[in-house]
Length: 247
Image (cartoon, rainbow, N blue to C red; front, side):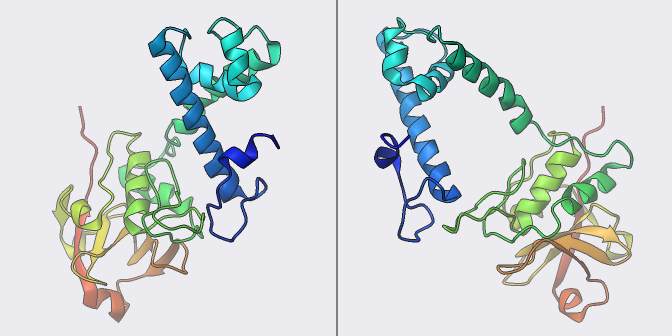
């Protein structure tokens, strides 16, 4: 609202203007506002002036105002729009936080490949990507994407149905799973390279000498043939196979 925006506005992408129509600015401002409302409702519950779930009360306060919630006696106001809003938003949480179901056919390795391929042409973003998809990483551009290890941790997490979460660091990922001989690389295996230093890049094997990876700034998630490319073969550092725990 025009009366609310000036309090929470932030020039998140650094272009000199904070605008509610700029996604980076608007989403950041929304986050700041909701955190403040949550702190207010949690504090009210602790003080005994509010009752209920702090998240639901914060959502109600976002919809009709914190004063409205307080005037309702400390709970969610008996306003149809507000109650419907709280119900819809809380019900949607499960959909937005659940892993994307992997394909029903194929083995674990094939599911790793399919999860990564779903994000082909997604921008490379330093520090970008988590188990649920692309993120803005450590940059300030507001662009969401993956770095190399962000893509692999996402694909393995999704393929395992949320059972395996790799660390978001290439060197640490190299410590996971089991080593694989260069002549025994299967789809879904993690291939490691010494590009900008030891164990500085990781990709996902597709078979037939190909891999999918998030290469570097200015590029997007792509499939390349690495096994016959002198650049990659000269920097090859090993392969690891991640497998889900079987009952």
